[in-house]
Image (cartoon, rainbow, N blue to C red; front, side, top):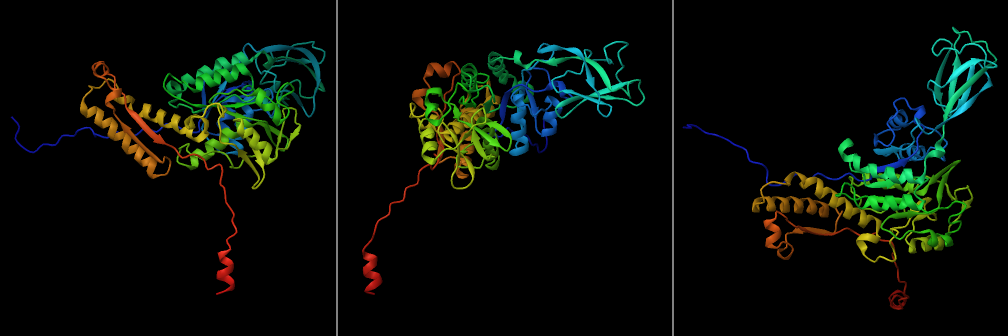
Length: 468
């Protein structure tokens, strides 16, 4: 028997929402991992929350044409000060390499500077000039380390090569050209690993330098709509502005893929740096989302980019008028514009516009909100799976979802929202099979992309002003 006063606890009937990440890019490309202190395995998603961490795991080079992840790294961390980023490097230096024949190299101030493509491994062999004699010993005669754009071989004062004016060097070097568009497209599948390895589901898919190729764009589009069979992301894709691409704004339509993606043309430049516009747009979206509490309800259009001009792939300058930029927007392509307040992103539409007239698909912020809310609902109620299907369980899910959505409405992130369990969507056979369907009604605000003033002369003011 029990004799006394007792207290027990019951699980809260309303679940705390697990809000999905917003503005987190998954970026596939090449990195100079031969220069990294702690190189990540090729094809493995790598989470980086700072510039120093990215350099440590991936290395860095200003040769963005070869090492495409470095462009994104520089833009996201240095220019937009955003984090985190999930990188996926496909360059495997164990196989993507070739031999550089032994040759005599001049020594300057006891140092030899090899290109950053040189690999510091057992194939790095340093001998006296002419290639005769025994090889010098690492750690005794020289040290090798990466600095800037070079693999530096420094001759040690304690070694036998210190006063040499020339040395003979053989080494292996990275052959990045072995990586193909198909490799990039295949690696996009590795976004599936992000949740199990890192606990994060990215919502922006990027492949700077490759997304303009049709095979890569197709893979990005397919994966954006189906991550782990549950989650959605937005693919940020560049339209080719190279030698065989769109060289003028009027050529863009023929190069465009009419899918529910965000498409950009041409490239942005800042000083001597050239950026794929998708790279800077990812940074801008992440920056705006962070400013809105991690909610992607606001369009990046008319917000500041980190650039001082537009250009084609070969550096040819591009100057767009407002009418030309609006033409691009009208065919579902976003760009940049220097018109009223410096260089800003320009355009609210996804690439499915104007062929798709569903507002949840063709507006970037509305489309992203639908993906974000859906991702959040999956993460929040995953813990309810396989529990006994009782009325209390259903009410818990309904109440929890409605409270969270009402909060979003209160903050202005949604104009209105509710969740209902409709009888016609839940036949008895489905309920017996353990299937519940809940209907979410929601309305994210559309961007105010056109504001019209009507000016009219009112003669009554003449009377009131002059006859008063």
